[in-house]
Length: 188
Image (cartoon, rainbow, N blue to C red; front, top):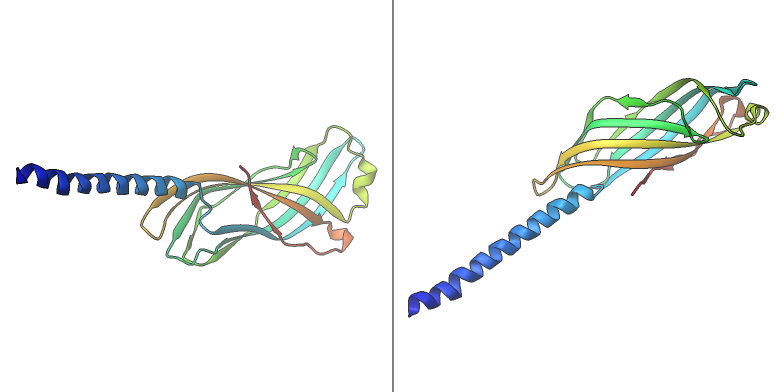
């Protein structure tokens, strides 16, 4: 009689507790894959060295940016970016893509990335070449796509691919204005 009672009173609660803890760990791991892990993406500097348009709507551009990736999580994390792709967009037209070299951030640290975009792009729609000529600032949306993996505080392996968008007001070199640092927001 005592053998069955001990099995019911001791072993079954232990099994239920172990299953509940395993479920909680798996749920936490899944949620951590969705998180930013205290990372912040900021475009800290930018300038359009060239930004002009021909009468046949061909845009000539030379854009230089500085993107700061910062780990603000005050914990023992190591995060490696396997892919980091940046794409500036002007009036719904992509101005080329830049794939940056893989890099990592360990613990509380930051990394500066300096992509540059140069080329000519045929514009469509109602873009007025004469309005482009005297601009001081140009509204550009910078799209970031980051594929990263990392180890977190509790030795969880995190692997995710996230998208961000930065709405920039980039000064033209001839405009003489200063760039205002802009935080990027995660796209859902």
